[in-house]
Image (cartoon, rainbow, N blue to C red):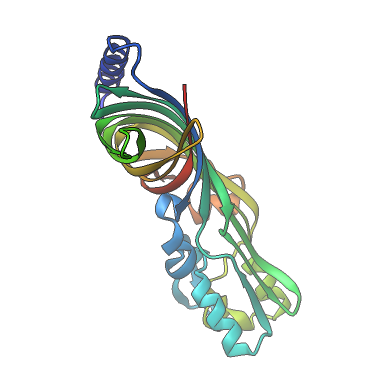
Length: 295
C-alpha cells in the first residue's frame, strides 16, 4: 500500500469533515482490547520451534540433524513426562497483547461516519518458556511484541431510536487504511553446551535435549522492526450511556513488512545469522471495548 494512497484518503476524510454541518455529532473515543497471538508466533513457541543453522551430533560425533534455536513447548513437556520431572518445564504459551485505543469520530449526515485513531499494543501475557534439569535452567526464552497503529475509517452506521426519536444505540461498519510501526523480539538462553557437560554427553542422545544449542546461546537478544501501511476494517455496536456511548467492536488489520535484526553473540550468528530477517506484522483481529464521549 503506497503512502500516497494513505495520504489521499486522510485528506478526503478531513475535507469531508470540515465540509459537514456544524451540528453533526462528533465523538472522542477511548478503549481497550486484546490481540491473540501477535505476529503469529504461537506455532513457533508451542509446537514447531525453529531450526538452527548449526548441526547436532550424537555421543559418537555422528551427524544427527539440525539443532534448534527455539525448542517447542510441547516437546519440552513430552521430555518432562518421559523423565518423571527430572527435566522440568514452565510453559507460557503463545503471547497475548493488550491494546489501548483513542481517536476522533464524526458523523457525515445521518448514515455515514468517519474515524481517525491511534492504537498502542504490547504483550501482556505468554511468550515465556523455561526448562531445567535437576534445578539447572538450561533453556529460558522470552518473546516480546509492541506496535503503534494510526488507522482511518469511513463507512455506514445504522442508529437505533426510541419512541421519541432519540438515538439509543446503533451498529457500524467501516473500511480504511492504516500506518503502522511494529517490532517483536526474543531473548534468553538455550545452553546445550552446559547441559551436555553436566550430563557427560548423555543428553546428546536423548530426544529433545539433543536439540539444545551447542555452542550455547547465553543471554542473546534480537529485535525485528518494520513500518508501513495496510488495509483495515471495523465492525461494532454501541449503546447510549450518559453523554456518550459504550461500544464493542472487532477491528481487523491486514499488513506485513520485513524486519531486520542483529544477534548479539557468536553462537547467535551460527544459530540464525549475524543479521537475520523475519516478517513483522500488526495483522489480526483486535477485540475492543470502550466509551465514546459526545462533543
